[in-house]
Image 1: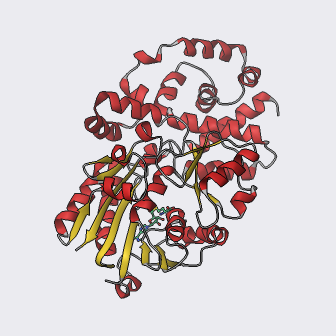
Image 2 (image 1 turned 45 degrees about the vertical axis):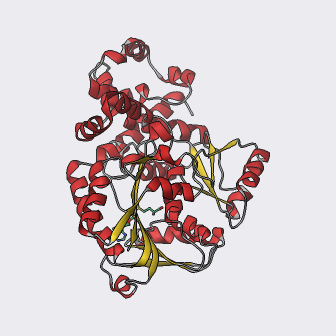
Image 3 (image 1 turned 180 degrees about the vertical axis):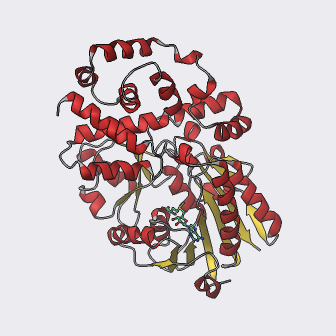
Amino acid sequence: MHPNALLEMSSELLRAVLQLDSPADSVVSAFFRKHKALGQRERHALAETAYTVLRQRPLLQHLAQSGSGPTERRLAILGWQGNEAFLRGALNTQEQQWLEQVRQIDKTQLAPRLRHNLPEWLAQPLLARLGEEQFWALAASMNEQAPLDLRVNTLKAKREEAQATLTAAGIHAELTPFSPLGLRIHGKPALNKLELFTSGCIEVQDEGSQLLALMLDAKRSEMVVDFCAGAGGKTLALGASMRNTGRLYAFDTSGHRLASLKPRLARSGLSNIYPTQIAHERDERIKRLSGKIDRVLVDAPCSGLGTLRRNPDLKWRQSLHAVQELQAKQTAILASAARLLKSGGRLVYATCSLLDAENEAIAEAFSAAHPQFKKLDAAEVLSRAHVADAERLVENGYLRLWPHQHQTDGFFAAVWEKQ
Ligand SMILES: C[S@@+](CC[C@H](N)C(=O)[O-])C[C@H]1O[C@@H](n2cnc3c(N)ncnc32)[C@H](O)[C@@H]1O
């Protein structure tokens, strides 16, 4: 394709993504379905350029003011993630000069909001919590690409065997530092045609998500509920931890999300999982199971702000008001889910949010309102689950993962035992 035609396509994709009315990954997928002839490298350049502009939107919009021509074209030039020579081939003389001038600007002298690239309502609580140094490290880490983590399905393979099979296929994978089940790949090799993947020996799952599932410590022959199972990332990990015995209910209000669990379930070899769509957290089916369950995971609906490396659009699509609405939902779901537990049962509340409002605040309020639930120390729970360096992952007895410290998405988890 002619360089200018690709740059024009990049502007078109940016125009759609920057509407921010639906998730960027679905806008990008829909764009590629419409433009089937695009090659692998072209897709990569278009997607990464769109993601770079989303990550650095305030900075790039500020810098784009000085240029001429359509705004999206200027943003695509500034955020371009394809071949540099290719970009040069697309630019006219005036644009080339402008790009040179912009590249000369010392970005370290710009206003803070143009350097952290976060909305103020999000930057403020993070800065207050973390202090200057950690805050800037976090902001930088969230503009990086996340590595690709895999969880080895221990029903079918051992971690070192899976690593060796990947090496034989030319894919370098390291052992994840904390999860005993994880492998980490840098870059984005296609995995879905590998036999290792199609036979269910590996699943794509961030190391942080693996740790959340490990914290439930689901055992053989138990009755377990994954209350907000979604597409079942954690369900599959829990089913394997139960060695394909007992009963694992995968609840979710979204039938569409539960439907995506089906092919993953088929690959995994698990037959102890019961996907069940519920109307809401007080559904009759839940009432019938009250007091009968050994372990409950609440992977609550949340702002997703811990996943900004993968979903940078969320910082522009979320708001303080949305977070407040989520808090009410999280509180209600956690209270309902807790009713399922037998005495001696374990409850885990988790989110992929960075905000205290969706994490500690919800957990503390739950503890205060439910004295029969005793908080367990997350470091002890993690150590017992063979997680290395567990102390490094815990603040005030809660699991607290940060992209800049742990190279995982941002996660929170609280654990209780019902007395
Ligand atoms: C963070 S996602 C779950 C991700 C999933 N556990 C995984 O590992 O892939 C939260 C899920 O909660 C579901 N949800 C929202 N409201 C709910 C409710 N009242 N009861 C149960 N699930 C709910 C959403 O449909 C969404 O799938």
